[in-house]
Image 1 (cartoon, rainbow over the protein chains, first blue to last red):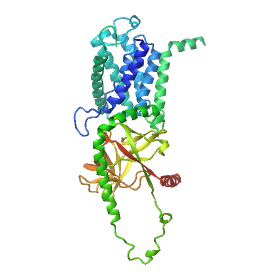
Image 2: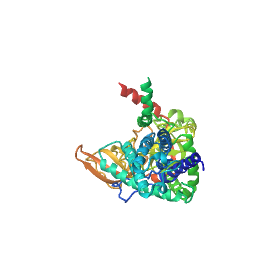
Image 3: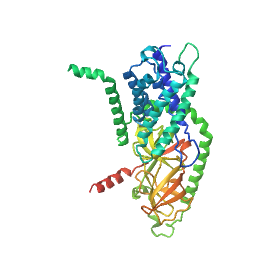
Length: 181
Length: 286
């Protein structure tokens, strides 16, 4: 399948998954009335994480911006998601360079995936960027350092849950065989 | 000049990155100052239509619960209506009995508030952010504008924030930006705010220490609000704390509206709000 069509389809699937399903379920790790923060997992940064290796940085930035703005327009957060997503889109290339054994240009026509990178490097790559994204997003959302424990708790809980959903997504949507999803 | 072009080419990515981040910051700031950017909100047409489609599907699963809540509300309204009809007839012994019966009595009655209720269906809802928004399927073509109050059958919901032609999104009371004046049973006034923690718990602040508040007391909106009609239920008291610093009480309320399963709301327009606001603004200026 053409790489453009594939990524456009993936964009639609991930945004729909985020907006129509994940945004509707509110999670809480234990049920105490006003102790632990409620949160929802954010899976949409996965779109930026899964773009092909040779995507130029400017394209990554624009795609990250568009993804963020789309989610913003659904969630009435005007720019907050876009800010966090542009940040991880910018840092993606550096993280990949640090994690991969060979130069990025040698991976022509491939996506970052568990199959191409191995479990551990891929999990480190996605966990690092997801944590960064969540930290950025929740800092902007709460916009205060007065209860930093609450912020960190929310970031950690949300990031771990997002990672679980990302792994489930990858296991579901990666086809075995010649097609690399 | 060549150096400049070289510089741009070398740091193009960094410049683009910073540029996009600045755009984001401008967008965020623009919304936070409440100037209202309606393009990037769920009131815009694309998100509105997608949320509408989703709501059409999910709608049927909630019909039974909705019927129950409508029946409850009908029963409550009937009770109120009966009370209104069976009030004491003070005109009975009056001598001017006959004179107070012209057909167009409306011109003689002076009202300080005149409420119009419009029904709307909730097509998107959130309870987990710091500022929660709800999207409804009514917009400016149905006479809705920014600032109108929104209530449900069981209590207050929020205030209209963004409006497009057929959709609008409202800031629910589960938001750090909204503050509603409220009164306790005895008539003490305070403000209801939300502390961002649980979507079922609201906080009533600015109540003096000496006022006795019992668990289970009901809190209603008061007459001071420009947009909210008086005597709409907000919640019931579950816990009180005394803040020694300013001798005030902090009262935790269980919200009477269930924000998890909101389906129909009423948008309330006060026809006299404009006049009242104008007067209050002009006196505030002096």
